[in-house]
Each structure stands twice: as structure tokens, then as C-alpha cells.
Image (cartoon, rainbow over all chains, first blue to last red; front, side, top):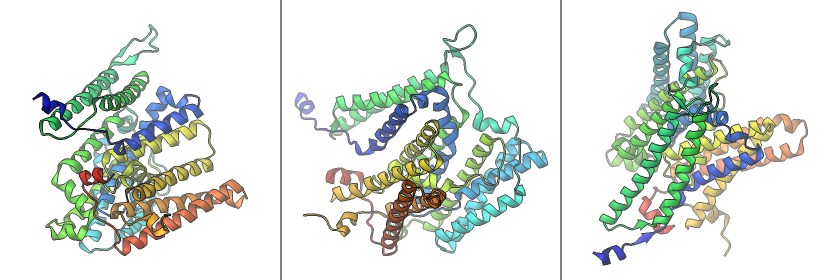
Amino acid sequence: MENAVKNQKKVNLSLKQYGMVLALIAVYLIFAVITGGKNMAPMTVNNIIMQNGYVIILGVGRLICVLSGNVDLGVGSVVATCGAVAGTLIVDYGVSSPLAMLASLAVGLLFGAFVGFFVAKLEIPPFIVTLATMLMGRGICYVILQAQTKGPLPADYTWVSTGFLPTIKIGAAADGTGGVYLICLIIAAVIAVLVVMGDIRGQKVAAKNGLPTIYTWQLAVKDAVIIGIETFFFYKLGCYNGIPIMLILVAIVVAIYHFITTQTVAGRQIYAMGGNAKAARLSGINTQKVFFWVYANMGLLCGLAGIVLSARNASATPKAGDGFEMDAIASCYIGGAATSGGVGTVIGAVVGAFIMGILNIGMSLAGFDTNVQKIVKGAVLLGAVTMDLLGKRKKK
Amino acid sequence: MKPTLKEWFGKEVTQLTLTLRIGCAVYLIYLAWELRGSVLAGDIPFLLAALAFFVIGAALGTHSLVKLIRREYTVPSSPEEEEETA
């Protein structure tokens, strides 16, 4: 027994999967220095979530599309149209907010099904179909809104993007200033415990099955970094207004799609099609059905992003969603979908979205000119491309 | 021995990687287009940046598109195989 323990093979922690997390920390710290710590303020940390929730939602949907080997250029237009439908129903027809939200989701799903039908059934290249929806969607949006901005939207609609979970504050002064919202501390503690327990369980299972285990000190360092990040994050949220509803929404979306892509047959089918669609079809996967649902799903998430964006702006605008396709694809790429050997993950897309979000907010706080911001974004993208190319070459 | 350009880009890429590279190439060209105002105003740094983005984006996009059309990509290996070769 003692020999078995002594002979337990140990391996180093694979840093490849945490490369983007380290990049996220590095970007954040760089901007902390540039902005003099402004990006560490509670309000800024809160804004990272509030202003980038839609990027994460679209990034997840975009990742599913790309994993199946396809693209969707119409994302921005569909987001704008869904927001326009919800806004018009509320402002012009007095429809209740929940119904308007359902309508927005339905319109997104309809767009997605439209694209899915042409791509899956008629086998028209996705580039062509989604280019068409990009143009049509924008046109429909302008027609619905009559080139105007519809607003203001009511509080029970904007609550999705601007509301916070009810909670109690501890440590506040008599006048109510200072203090931390309790729920944030509780969530931070729960996550810390889950992280540590997850690793302990993983090590036990590996040891039990005779598999190599990771050096304990490396796991301890990794856990310390992750717990440090999440504690900092939730503490800052707790110093502001608590947990934003947007964070709950994004966490639910990420959890669902992480589960689908890692634990379900559907997820494996999507990965299989992205690797080799012909082989996937020959192995019995109904590729038409999968393609259809991938695009229908993208449409649904566009509907959700449309709700989030119009709620954040408290209005529906014809120019909403401009350039969203770019932010979503950059999130997927920077998050490691291309640097990890082609096996993209939902978590990677989320990390990529956070990197983009921190970049955007950091540059705004630092007062960078908009053109300079574009150069920085381009440079970051070039860095990711370089890592991708170098990574492939080093493997050889 | 220095790798050739062909070896540099390598053949160990997946369909996913090529698709994303095309997306990034489009983004770089889009950024170059967005910088046209400063370029027309004659700002040299912006001109150089726009040129770099356009050239790299066009090269990356074209190369990736050609590989995608010619199906010059591999099926992703399993995570266990990736760790062994890393």
C-alpha cells in the first residue's frame, strides 16, 4: 500500500488551458497601472459585467456555430431587430414586458430557424445566408423602428440589465456608506470551497484509478489564483450594489452551454461535425438536424442579447448591434478556440469576452482616442493569431 | 534548419481554427477600414497600423480560405494525444 502511494505518478499542471486566464490577469493589471487603479473600482468591475453581458451571450452562441464549422454574419442585425420588436411592442402597443421579451426571443428563434433551413436543408453556404440575414435584419429593424429610437422602456424591462439581487449589507456606517453586500461574500466563499473540493475529488479519483496526479503544490497555487480572482471580483461587486441580474443571466447561459458541450451527446455531435462533417455524417449523425438547431440556437441567443442590450440602453435603436459579429468572433478566438488545437470551449469564449471587455473599459478609462482603441484591439488580435501560429509550429 | 513559409503555417490546423482565422482576418480588415478617417487625414502611425491590419488580415484570410476550400485540415486529436505530443 505504501509502495503504491510512493509510486503514484505525478505530472505537472498543464498551463495550456490556463494561458488565457493568465492573459486576462495580465491585461487587467496592465490597465490597472495605466489607469492608476481606476479599473479596480467597484463601479468599474460592475460595469465590466453590465456592459459586456451581451458579448458573452453572443460569444457562447458564436462558439457553438464555429464549433460546428460554420459562421454567422447576421448576429448584430438580428440583435437589433429583436430589440426593436420588444421596444415597439412596449412603447407603441402597450404590451407587458414579459410578453415583449418572449416576442423578442421568438423573433430571434425565427431568424435562426430561417438561416438553419437554408443552410441545413438547401445546403446554401452559411456565409451567403447569414450575409443575407445581416442585410435583411438591418432593413427590418429600420422598418420596425421607422429609423427612430423607441423608448424609454419601463423599469420592469430594464431590470434585466440594470437590476441587482436583493440582499443585505454588512459593515456599513450609520449613514449607509461603506460596507459589503453579504450575498457577494457568501457566493465567493461557496465558489472557493467548490474549487478546492473539485480538485481534491479529481486527485482522489485519479489516484484510485492509477492515473497520474498533479503535484499538490501546483494545484494549491492554481486554486489560490482562481480563488483570489473570484474573491476580488465578488468583493468589488459587494462594495457596489451587489450581484447584477445580468451576472445571474450570463452565468445561467454559460452553465447551460458548458453542460451541453461537455456532457451531452448533442455537444459531442457538434464537435464531431466541426472536426469532419463528412465523417460525422457517415458515423450516423444527422448533420442537417444539428446544423438547423445550431443556427436556431444562435438566433435564440441573439434574441436574448437583444433584450439585454435594449434593456441596458432603456430603448431600442436602429443602429444597435453594429459590429457585434466582430466582438463575438474575437472573444472566441482570443479565448483560445484557435490556440487550443481547435477544441474550443464555452469557458474559453467567456474568458475571451472578459478580455475584450476589460480592454474596452480600460481604454475608455485611460482616455484613449477611439482610433487608438482600434489599434490596440487589432494588436491584441494579432497577438492571439501569433500565439496560434507559433503554437501549431512548436507542436511539430 | 529554418522552417519554410509552408512549414511555418503548418498543416496541423482544424476546420475550426481556419474558420476562426477567417473571422479574425475579417475583423482586422474591418479595423483597417474603420481607421480610414485618420489615414485620410495623413496620420502616419494610423496609416501604418491600418496598412498592417489590412495586409495581415488579407494574407491570413486568403491563406485560411484556400486551406478550407482545399480541405487541408486535420481532425482534432484527443486531449490525451495532445498532452503526449506537447
